Image (cartoon, rainbow, N blue to C red; front, side):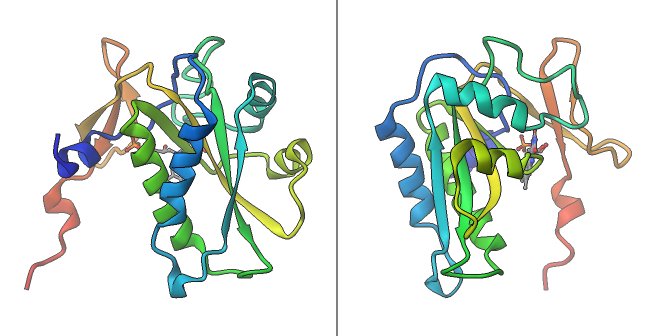
Length: 191
Ligand SMILES: Cc1cc2nc3c(=O)[nH]c(=O)nc-3n(C[C@H](O)[C@H](O)[C@H](O)COP(=O)(O)O)c2cc1C
């Protein structure tokens, strides 16, 4: 698969096999995030790695899954993430204006993981106060988002947007279908 096909094959994963991820693997994904583009190369992003089964179980109720299909599509026991990476911005390095850095870093992280057959769900619907308490994250670290991870146990697919409806859905085979706007919808013009 070339890089174009690989990028196109990535879908958000919300069902995971229970084989554990190694520290080396998780560090590799953070290394990929570490070298992502950063505005003015300020690099304010820092990461907390949640790897143990005990802590992963404690993280689970602090994140919200698949808004359009909740709660039916929430990962069940035996399908839950085996690791989480909490993405923080160090406000002593940069106070604001790092959102695009986060986008680039998280995408790098997720694509690097996918190369190991590790799926990811980028999550903004999270309980930041409780995550801060659980992981003892200092106040100067702004908690931006969480990336839930684990080996893939589902294969969602791209679908086309019908009548403007972008909500993901389950088809007859219970496969998650993710409507994406077509090329004709996203290119404004080529001059
Ligand atoms: C910034 C951001 C926040 C997201 N937050 C959540 C979330 O809290 N919970 C969740 O289940 N999915 C979340 N997602 C995943 C999106 O639902 C998913 O990317 C979208 O449905 C498109 O699917 P795809 O990633 O397979 O292309 C988030 C994605 C992004 C980019």
